[in-house]
Length: 396
Image (cartoon, rainbow, N blue to C red; front, side):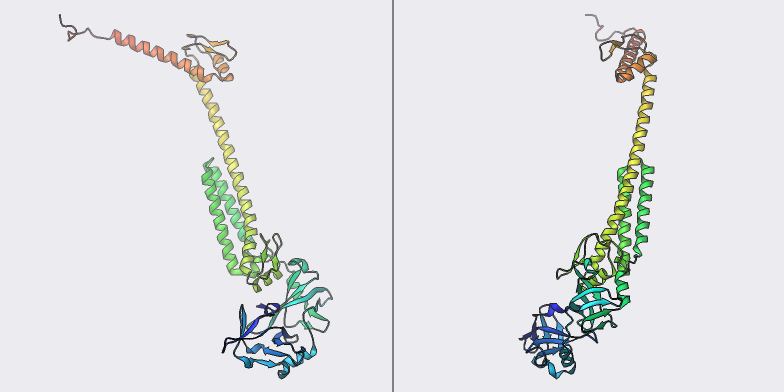
């Protein structure tokens, strides 16, 4: 699909000689047939004196030039009945007002889109009107066969306006919901099972989001325009000519989708729609993951506190009834327990309160080791057999 104004000023080149023979000055559309009839290459006072190239004589609409077979493709406009009739009517589409059947103004025509293979008019670019805020003051309006072109206005059928206003939901919504639920379930399961294994929970989140991306790609491939409609664009999409197709944060309408496809930007629009939806789903998934991990972390801290409490109880049980191997002093200088005294539960509680439980354990352990050492030495000395004559016992 080509915009009419893109052809203005383009060179016309003959295939047989490779020479530039003319440039495009204007286009001639048949408003009743919705058809491009030809290109004006020499105006000559605009009417029948003008020279033209019939649409059927164009071999190709190239990026840099329009190709015709030879110079004979350039004719006088008056020699073609359809061209002569339309040009005599002096009806210019550019600037024509677009109205709905109910009398609502859609804007003014500023350009015409046509199919380069058939010449059929596919739509109009309009400015102003109630839809002008959709795309930087410019709106694409499809051109159905039953549009009525008059001398003062073009009447757009009701069904076209209804399609432009429609806000349909794409089938991907369910896919997002399912994938998000899967992520939530996997993170909660990970948090409950691992209790503190952040790496395991994060892996589950990554797998869930990867599944979400796969679901999105499958839906985009299968639904085309239907997929993007009703979604929110994550970023701005701009056509090659600078026209903004959709702004970041806007809800994508059938009109946006139609314009994007004509500009070859449907894939980019799908990515914008996918980006907005995935971003939302991913944020929910990430929030769910964080909640799960926070719960797991809280459980771990509680378990560690329980273990720490249990450990302190066991430590106090260990020291109670043992003998202190040396004096243990309190932070204020007072003596908690003196060397040789038996440690009581009161001693243990006070040591815990003042952060001296480890010191009390060391004192108790030192005394136990000392007693064990002394007992062992005494036993070894008492059990030692009489020495037999040896090298040291030999008479001198």
